[in-house]
Length: 208
Image 1 (cartoon, helix red, strand yellow):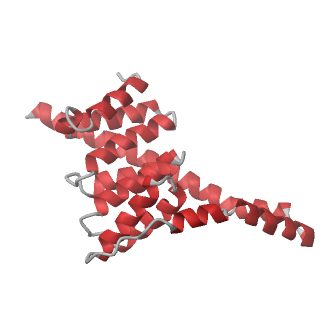
Image 2 (cartoon, one colour):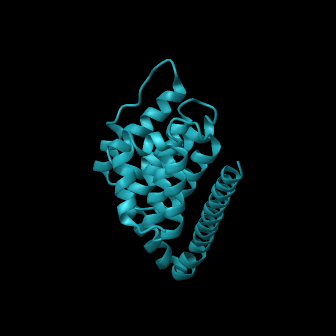
Image 3 (spheres, helix red, strand yellow):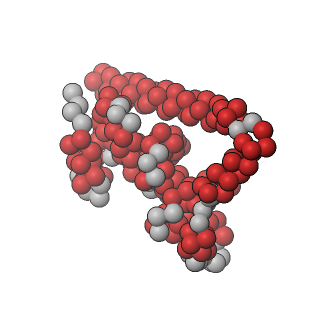
């Protein structure tokens, strides 16, 4: 019993450390976002600068071809509108339209926090960021999905993807914490459906 209690305390401490790390990442991202507009305005004062800013914004926007490709992806129309919102986000992600999928899935999880698909939605939202090369934005969604309901259908997936995000951020220590937590909490997944992904991630880091 004492040994089990000690293990539980270690797991709780590990999860707390992960949470603190994600909070720090979120805070850093907020500061970066908040400081960006000020720097942009300072660099584009005057009418000529404003014109360049508008031109740059237009140039960086989605192309007509991309807009047409996104519009070609049909949104399901079933008796479950919330599930349709998730499925549309999945289709956008599956087609490689990651920013559009991020927007769609964010809307879904915020508007339908209690839907049975929400565990899938938060996990897929994290993946949409991770696949877009944005591990820092992905990590909070994976952690949230794991913490909200550890018995959720994609909670184990999210914990494993959290380790993957930490690996992408070169945070080996917390990647190892997440991997250890995953193997202890979801041994059936570690030896079953997610075994290949788990072993691949383990091979990327050296854990104590």
